[in-house]
Length: 165
Image 1 (cartoon, helix red, strand yellow):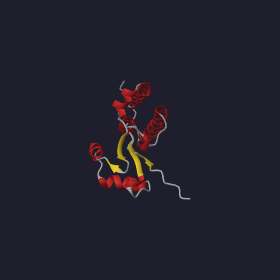
Image 2 (cartoon, helix red, strand yellow; image 1 turned 135 degrees about the vertical axis):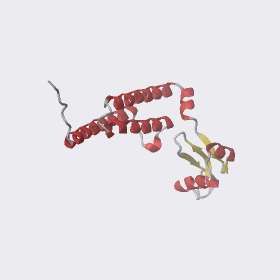
Image 3 (cartoon, one colour; image 1 turned 30 degrees about the horizontal axis):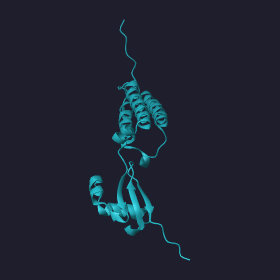
Image 4 (cartoon, helix red, strand yellow; image 1 turned 180 degrees about the horizontal axis):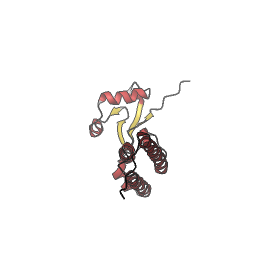
């Protein structure tokens, strides 16, 4: 007796893709929640890299049913586990955190731009002035200290204004 494999219709194929997409979406939401709540602009480099890799891996099993679903979910689970372990190590070891995330760097001190630090960070004067204008600073002499944080944001401390009586 000859067994004839069942022929998948286009509707069956689309239903399977829909279900796989929903399952992967829910799994990634769970994975991101496990890694912690952060906005993209607040992410450390390692977190951003993991997020990009996860999105790339997740796309593979969503695009076709010939790819086993587990072959997409397993690497995502491994990456999320690695990110959680990495974040635990970073919380416990300052040296490890410095290696992975880097250190904040002072770029302006007492109203003077530290050119060596700008070059180290590969920030042009135009980019610096743009960052300052976004924080409503139009005169560098107003700044006591400006620091580029490990996530790329700039923190400023203005000079104290003298009180007028």
